[in-house]
Image 1 (cartoon, rainbow, N blue to C red):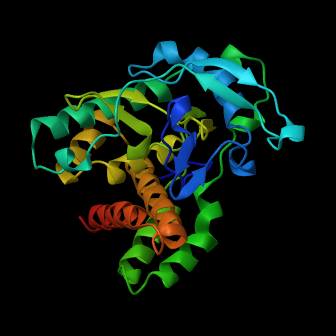
Image 2 (cartoon, rainbow, N blue to C red; image 1 turned 90 degrees about the vertical axis):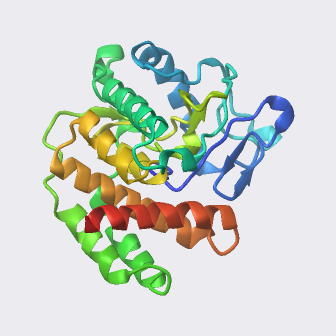
Length: 285
């Protein structure tokens, strides 16, 4: 659940007959009620996905058309139509069996996708900049909200462990490489799998940006178990600082979603509880 833009959300694409068009962690968002938090997503996906898709090993939405805002109809945002992608949100349980072939296969697919995404040519190679819509927020900008969420959930999770993990993430060396593409909301709900359980697509690029790619490591805690996570880290060849910052993104986005929705949405409570506990277990290894 997480990336620089709308990291607390989970999305699912529907056929037009299945409106509402998206479900975002408890926010049932029919057309006309998406809100400003997703206002730029259609334009961003329309601009960038056709350019990035050829370099990615999994399918991504292919925009077919970009609709114009219609304030007079109560919908003041751009909207888009994308080619339908077959698949279903994968089951988390298959990645939690120690040393299972499926767990290691999925870890490899995730690592291959992120490696390809993070190595794509910079935005300016495709279109002259600047591209302000690709600038993400920093982990430090989440500090006050995350500490407040730690205090608010101290009766559910280990506050000392959360504080230790969060401090370690903030204290990790900053990203020193050049700006890298990141998905920005790379969690289980934005993956699609085929009937055999193999990943076949990645959706919802509203958080797409360039900068520190650590935010995309949230997937290690929303989807993978300990053995799959270890394989994922090895395959991705992630340095210690990036791994620590990624854990911080998993913790802060999990806490954000938990405090916002857990009391009224049991599914979100279960998902974010797993995410937070996986992050704490990794920190305490």
